[in-house]
Length: 77
Image 1 (tube, helix red, strand yellow):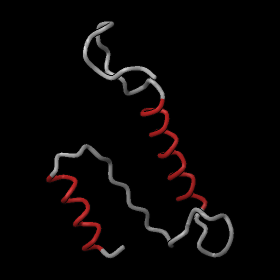
Image 2 (image 1 turned 180 degrees about the horizontal axis):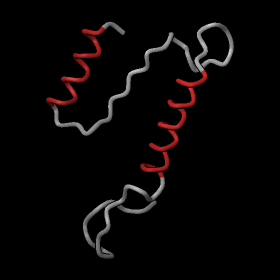
Image 3 (image 1 turned 120 degrees about the vertical axis):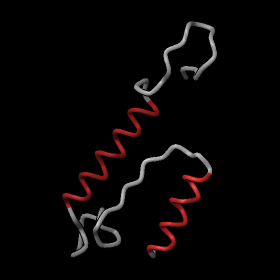
Image 4 (image 1 turned 180 degrees about the vertical axis):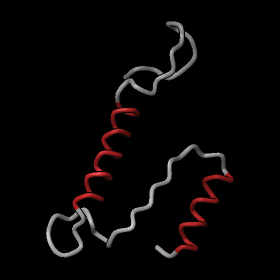
């Protein structure tokens, strides 16, 4: 994606007040694909670790607010 497109996405999210984390990888397209010359095992591992951390935090209980039972806040599923 061209730099201008990335900048537009970043500024749109920021202007909208959307909480997000931004990661860019200096790697070839399809660097996760474990075959061929574009594969980058270090970048792939880092991106997998980031994804697993996100899943743990958002799908697990690591990011839920602590509120009194019956109080406002996120519910446990």
